[in-house]
Image 1 (cartoon, rainbow, N blue to C red):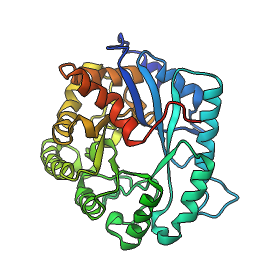
Image 2 (cartoon, helix red, strand yellow):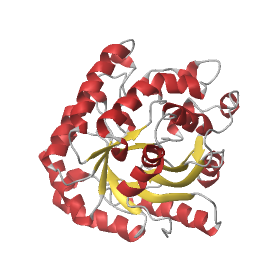
Image 3 (cartoon, rainbow, N blue to C red):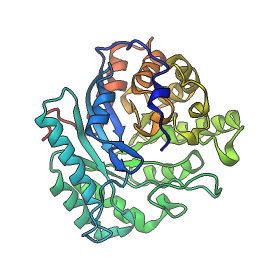
Image 4 (cartoon, rainbow, N blue to C red):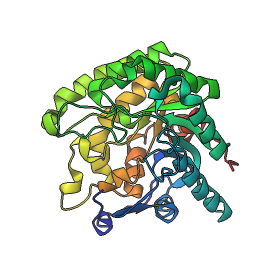
Length: 337
C-alpha cells in the first residue's frame, strides 16, 4: 500500500472537539514486507489528539495459520489480534485496541461452518464479535475484486446463505463489503434474514476508477437510490468512511499535498450526510479504515473532517455517530480481556 508519512505531515491541524468519545469500528493490523501496521503504529494514530476510547479490528488476511486446513487457517488472524489486544491491555494504554474482533470464515462452507466459528470463539472468547465475508466484484479488470476472491453474486448464493444463517446461532454480526453496483444483492440478503445484524462497510463502496472514472455525479445518484433502499432494512447498519481509498477516485494520494479536513469534509459530506439522513445516527458509525485510508490523509485530519461535517449535530447525535452505535452494534465492553 503506498504510504508517505512525510507527505501526510505536510498538513497539520489542531484537533477539533478533543474530548468527544470515539470508538473506531474499522481498522486493520498487518505486517507485510512493505507495510507494517501493528500496535505501535495504530497507537501513534489513535494518540494523535482525538479521544479514541476503543477500536474494532476487521479481517485482512493477517497471520493465517499454515498448519491448519484452509477452512480453519483464518483462526490464526483472531489469535494474532487477541495477542496484540493482550499486549495493549498489559501496557495499560488509554485506547482499548481491538475491543472487538471481526474475522473471516468462508460462509460457502455452509453447514460445516460451525467448527470454524467455534474455533474463533475459543481463540478470543470476549473480543470475537463477528464475520466479514467480502463480495466486492466487478467485471472490469481495472477494479480489483475483494481479497477473499469471491464469485459473482456471492450474497445471492444459496450455499453462502446456509452458512450465513448459522451466524445468528452464535449472536455474531456480519460485516458486508461490496461495491455500489452490488447493493441489490445485499438488499436481498438483508430482507431474507431480517433478524441478522448486517454492517455495511465504507458507505457501500461507490467506485470512481476504471469504467466509473469521470462519472461521479451519475454514480452518486445511483448510489443514493440503492442506499435509501438499504436503509429501509432495519437490520442494516452503515459505517461512515472508507472514501479516502484509491478506488473511490478522488485521487488525493496523487496530489502535491494531502487534503485538509475541510477539503475531505466538502468532498465526502454528500455521501455521509445522505447515509445519516436515511439510516439515522442510531444506525451509523464513523470509521477510519486505517491504514488503508492512510494513503490519502492522516488519522487526525480524517476525524477532524467527520467532526466538521457534524458540527451542527446535537450532543446525542454525535454520541451515537462517534461512539454509541459502534459499541452497541458490536456489544463492546471496555473491560474486554
